[in-house]
Image (cartoon, rainbow over all chains, first blue to last red; front, side, top):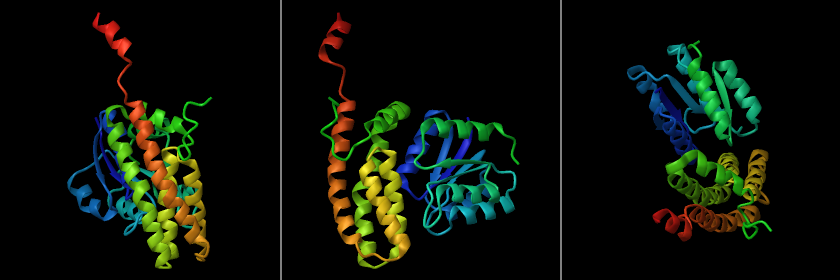
Length: 126
Length: 134
């Protein structure tokens, strides 16, 4: 069982993803705002963090930059369907350059999510 | 004939059938969250249009698009995508008519999702249980 933290302001996606991962035996915490997790991460380490990119307040890009500066070994999966003038491919490409280990495109497919999560969990933290 | 041909908005029922299998006992809870989003988000888009806030129109429409496509409401997903494009362009003329259509569709979609998901949850036919009881 791994400890996974999901950050997504879109409730249906967040609950959907959390349910899939809990059904697979993982311990999942979900939050809707990136700002909520900065303290949590320091106190309560997670094996994997899955974050949406386009969120109000702190977006996934800011979160990635800040998080990986302070916790460089944490595994992060970035998730996006694009937003604003940015295509999903571009958003995820930027997230990858900022340090995301794996990427999930929204709307997501079950098989892709499970494979991506298992692959990330098998990988040593970078 | 497609058994679900009467559905106007739920044009890709396979998405829900797959979700039902993938989510097992969590399906009804998850689908209720999607339904709430589908019902309430168009109103947020309408308010953003009325406030002439193009960025919010784009952001809310983008979320609506993803939510609709995730559960098989493909036509509504397209409407939301058009609203997102309008929001990105910054010129909201034409958005009012589209948002009214999206709101009408969201009510229909909510009923269709309930009907489809209720049908998926029906107990096994009586004769199967009778055979099992024997």
